[in-house]
Image 1: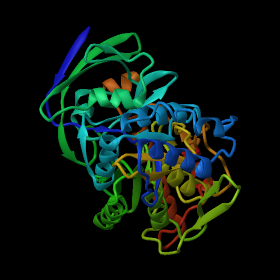
Image 2: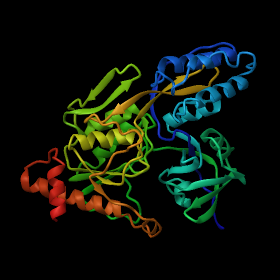
Image 3: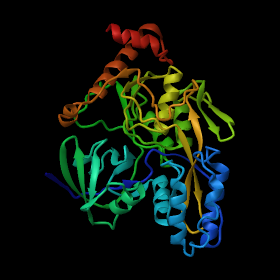
Length: 421
């Protein structure tokens, strides 16, 4: 077994693949009232009116004689919610809910990696850029088999997060299965501030000087839209942009809409559909910040808000998408704060791309498929970024030949040109 030790600052993000709306606080009294409050919220808001094909009323008084403390209520709530078979509708105890609020404000604790359950295995969805987890070598699709010597078989995301978190300065040991190989990582926990946007190229990457590179790590913190606007302003002298959404798990719906609006002259951005079939469509405001050519990088770790943005740009012919198929999360969660400091995120809507496509469990297909192999990753050879650089160069050249000023491009024509070249 290989052992890698890493002892710098890191954090754990608990909001894996989330598309979040923020609701007003709710109120309850006793632990039994707390349980009943959650039951009512799900009963009135959950996107599936049949609550996964069950009689939801059977849960309302199921634990009346057993709930005496808040901890009893927490266990009962989690048991009730598990019947929905929806990993995104989840209860957060006060500590977890505080973490969620810190995530939105841009400050977190942990080890710099987003986790999820895939095929019943605890999986690394994405290490966060420029964190110890990323620098230590954790990779998307790594399977976490042990945390501090304890097996993760059958573990929930909540329990895994609880085990990975800890006091500042303490270390967590993870056993990672990567193919047939097992690797042990030792990472020290600490507090870090999160930035949503970076214009810094990976060390080994090569992008032409007239091309702006923007890495959007997350849509979660409130500052994401402002950071994107600042990045576009900083790179205003560039002739085109590469927008990197790879391994971006999503975040706030408002950020996805605002950032889409920065690139679109007109057209639809996204539609949301609630449990009653009510459809609400968001249109571009016309206050576009740039019309310059655009290439978007996506992969299997691009989810939720990343898929709203990439779907809006693709369906409107605004950008060429390069990479691999995205994750496929077309659901929206609403944050509900509970009176004891706990909270519940409830799936309340599904969303559709501008063309009316439901991408849940399907994902978004890139215009040009390029895979980074295991060998590419080990050799720090980013073929996806190389292809994006080639594509944006062709788009810029096409723009110069056909137009006096950059404008929104029909994706189909540049793609034919790229193929011919």
